[in-house]
Length: 161
Image (cartoon, rainbow, N blue to C red; front, top):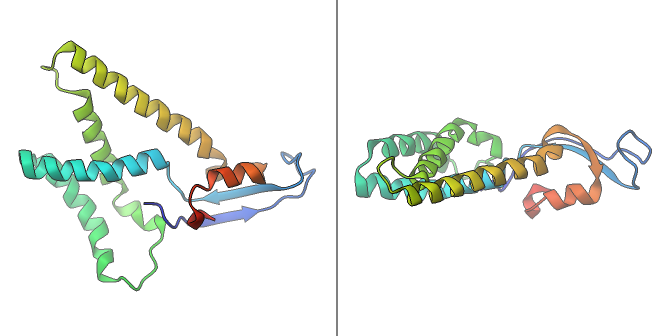
């Protein structure tokens, strides 16, 4: 859920620093992912579970096994602090789950043209929104100097600060 991303760098450069024309600026690197991609991938896991159980699709089961192998062992250590970067081990499987579900939205080649077209529009809309959101979060992924209020707008959850 990206509840506790790791802050790798934070600095408050003074006004007059290159890129800082306002009173209070921030330069930060925060290991928070694209929320649209991560949260859609989490929802995709639920869809994959139903697809695996209901349709007995081995591909869905393989992706779920990959996520489970990377994530479930952490439940054996509930006293340990879990940081966002620990998700690196199962992130590829989350992306595979999302791609699988986008493929379901896209439809099969045997589906009627109106179905394929509407699925294509939805997938393109999702990808465009993900690209725009990535551009929005880019400054906090790359330590760009931005006004503090702009940085604050990118902190969607209190635990990100």
